[in-house]
Image 1 (cartoon, rainbow, N blue to C red):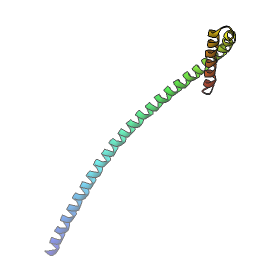
Image 2 (image 1 turned 90 degrees about the horizontal axis):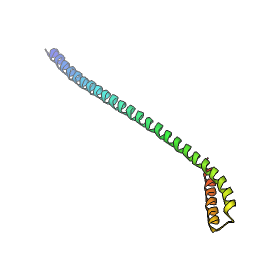
Image 3 (image 1 turned 180 degrees about the vertical axis):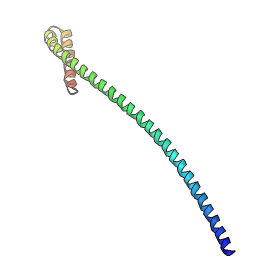
Length: 116
C-alpha cells in the first residue's frame, strides 16, 4: 500500500512537471512567433532604408553633376570675361566697373575649379 501511494505521489509529481514543461514549451513557441514578427519588421525597415539610401545617392549624384555643369559654365564665362574686361577696362568708369565685375566672375570660375 505504501508503494502504491509512493507511485501515485510520483505520478502526480511527474504530471506537475509535464504541465510546467508544456507551459514552458508554449511560452517558447510564443516567443519564437514574436521574434519572427520582429524579424519581419526589421527586414521591412532595412528595405525602406535601402530605398532611402539609393534615392539619396541618386540626388547627390544629380547635385554633383549640376555643380560640374555650373563650374564648367563659369569657366566659359571667365574666358569671355577676360576678353570683355580687356575691351572695356580703359574706355570709361562704367567700363572699369564692368571689367571689375568680369574679374569677379573669373575669380568665381577659379574657385569652381576645385569642385571639378
